[in-house]
Image (cartoon, rainbow, N blue to C red; front, side, top):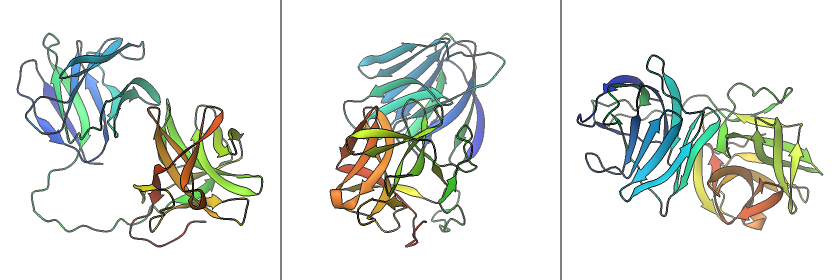
Length: 300
């Protein structure tokens, strides 16, 4: 996760750029005015995007000017209390939110390559205080990598759909965080998305989306998402279930769709990832598939 860094910024002071290796960060901010988070492809230059957070309002700006703004009572800055927010910049989508609430979402005209983040105070806001998890700085070059121990993904039967099991793995977002589930359905065991606010799973089947209230949720952390397409299944792909015909193995996949990141099922014989969106089944030929690195192990 990195080190929890606490720092302060003042208007018109030099910006510090922090390198990030993920596609999003969480941060805490305390200010009586406005606070700015900048996203950049290279350090010490103009930011590709600047998110300005104000009381009951936020806006996203590019080099061409303000591209997106929203008024939301969920946004508020306090002078004497930290408030927690998050921002992600996956592929061509910028998403800003708090908890499970998406406050602002912007679809970029092209894929971004954000590698640095910077924090600053707006011109008239005075001092701003921040807390953020940032990657530690290595002082020794070529540090040896150690294989991650434990955290193997596992399916956990959910007894109470209002409570997520410990270690539940976040799979994506669609107005809130989505989790990875699977459920028995018409002779199959089908993976899909679990929506915490509804306490329901949703799977793609035929041309429709079906609700499931008896589900297993994937837990663990020793896994990663790998880009794939058509019927290509990488080594170590997490087995999510099986089809009703011939019990063909189904894998856990996800798709970037309409500004969302939606969990679904990869069926190799169909060369696509199926996912439930609104009341329909959708499919994409290019998708991501969940993989346990350095492993040929299967999951049951």
